[in-house]
Length: 327
Ligand code: NAX
Image (tube, rainbow, N blue to C red; front, top):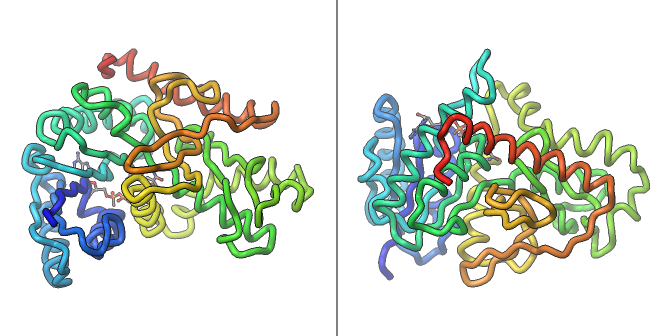
């Protein structure tokens, strides 16, 4: 089997450190699929990345055929079959959201351009670095020779967070929970759609008869989970984020007949704004990710969805106003 080229940006960061070894173990692309790892970092982080590469070497992984590590975009994205865009500039104290969007726009414009020029024409790109939905929009809109449907932003971590909270409340193992899908943005407006969630095939709202708990506790717990982890750990989610990145790419590549959460290029599904990257229920067959478009929502859920869809559109407008969007 020919090796595939897998890019990981921000490879010396905390998510990269978890993600690379799981990819190298065959968990994402299969136990027989040889890999060439192409790791991108800022120049300043190259010494740390060198240490990461030494550790990959020391795993003596049978699947890893070569490792490229670089701060050069052309070298990193050259012939890439898959890319995990993890590295981005974090929000710092005093920074407005517009500042965050515009700083990261620069990063994702450059990466989108490099993907457009140097990656395989069939490349699939998963954006993890925040604000991930809008970073995904920027990269995809810059990579104008590729289809926007080759780009995805990660919301599976939010789904896993929600699934576990619902399982705990229902007093069942999380494997009994299905259809706990995230709608909208990976941000504090996200909507975890408990109305369609099933426990052992039955609606969870018929089992937990507490609208107040769902609306006042559950939703805000999921919306604020990232911040709660930062407060507890003193650093943002890393192992669980890498786990969700592994899970998302695996579902995209290997398929998933059961619905999962991922942000895709919207064509207006569920009232979202076409052309934004919106999380919704998707399935994946033969490498093609397809949204499920026929779930019905009551006015309470529709209000939540509207709020998160509007935030995504507002982020797009901010980029347009700054002249940073190629659309
Ligand atoms: P770290 O700060 O540990 O690592 C980021 C790495 O990216 C650093 O080593 C930095 O040098 C590198 N980097 C920055 N700009 C770069 C560029 N232009 N090219 C290449 N490398 C670059 O952050 P980490 O904890 O790994 O998180 C990475 C990103 O994931 C952050 O934006 C974070 O907010 C985001 N997350 C997204 C999640 C999601 O569910 N979508 C959840 C977890 C996480 O918060």
